[in-house]
Image (cartoon, rainbow, N blue to C red; front, side, top):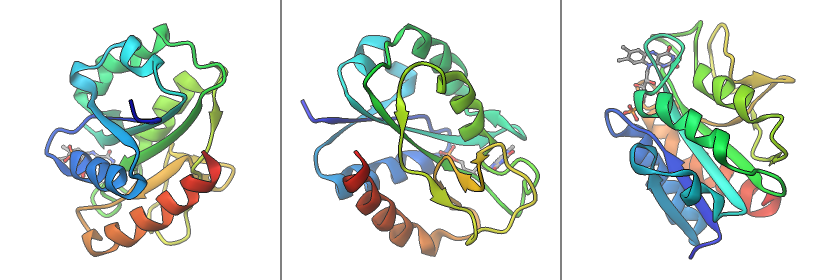
Length: 165
Ligand SMILES: Cc1cc2nc3c(=O)[nH]c(=O)nc-3n(C[C@H](O)[C@H](O)[C@H](O)COP(=O)(O)O)c2cc1C
């Protein structure tokens, strides 16, 4: 078993593609689609990465709507958690990557420590629940407007994670 578990939900495939890029860059990581993942699947990893796009104007991706309740049965003490989120800053500037904040609100008091915070300055948007203390909760990818930046962003973030995990 790899040391890192990556759990993602994806309706149109963008988040799945980014999850695969992250796994490739980290080397030692297992990929799980949240539509078929259990609490036991999550429990086995000490290092976790959760990936979710924002859908329906500020909502979780549909498979995450169920999976977020599955996470209630995980004991997060001692685990390290990182997030990545996909969104569309031009189409949805007021709810940009809100899903990150929705997930963190459910996980923040469960005993995990959180890594992988990411600067906001290279993105243009108006409001985001994915922000905390002036940083994004995790890697932010915008495949709708800035797909050419994705590879570099994944590289920089996974380099950062290698130090923080
Ligand atoms: C109907 C609809 C609603 C969306 N709502 C948001 C939103 O509120 N905030 C945001 O940042 N992105 C929003 N998006 C953009 C998606 O998050 C983005 O296209 C993402 O790459 C989709 O990921 P997926 O292919 O893994 O499903 C929305 C897209 C659609 C089509």
